Length: 69
Image 1: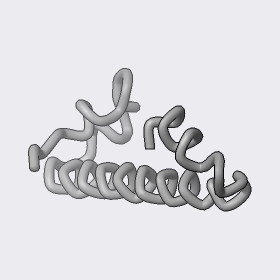
Image 2: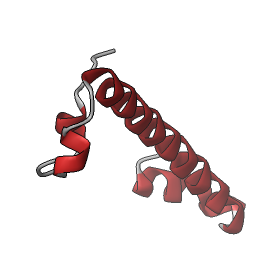
Image 3: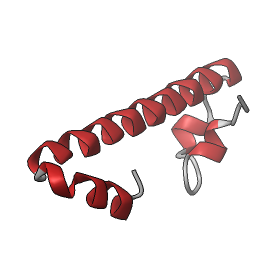
Image 4: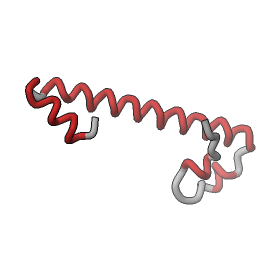
């Protein structure tokens, strides 16, 4: 896994107050942002799959294919 800096993870410039934090705090904050992004992706995937429960069974294959799931 590649470690990215907070400046690479956040679009645009960091606010001055955040940029002034010590390097160890910035590293921890970058780790938290990356973890939150992974968790958000997992939750989004789970939500997409649960939506299939509302699609009639005979259409689920076509819907999965169209959605790229």
